Amino acid sequence: MIIGIISDTHDHVPMIQRAVEYFNARQVSHVIHAGDFTSPFTFRALKQLICPFTGIYGNNDGERVLLQKLSQQRIFAQPYILELAGRKIVIMHEHQVVDALADSGHFDLIVYGHTHEPSIRKRGRALIVNPGELGGWLYGRSTMAIADLSTLSAELIDL
Image (cartoon, rainbow, N blue to C red):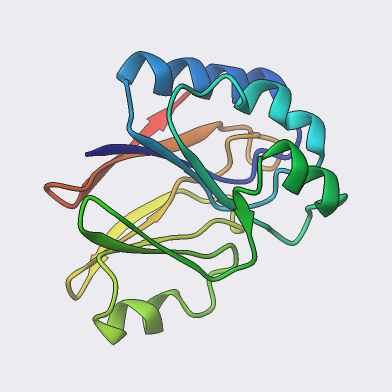
């Protein structure tokens, strides 16, 4: 199963549209958003995904009631745990407990954001992915990730 991973979109609708187009063309099976949508209008672009979507709230997400409504109840408080293709996944926004989660041995994939710096690494048996900032506002680089849950590997995508 191939999944898409984004974070820190921060209202950058043109980049969200590009990510959605890429994910749809790649026919990913699921998309994870690791927080900081910022405003509900970002769902104008995200609703074009042709696969299921799961997100968490970040520290900059306002108007959570409307975000929840427009996402059709698919945004959750962190940490959020889900299972896809037999893999146990935890989604965080902040990074402070990522290594402890990996060391616990309970998760196959740990997804986080917040730092705006892309990172893909292994720790123990866990794959840890920070897709960086899709919005590109902080570092001027719009990135996301694709993960293959069958091989537990990931690649960074620059848009």
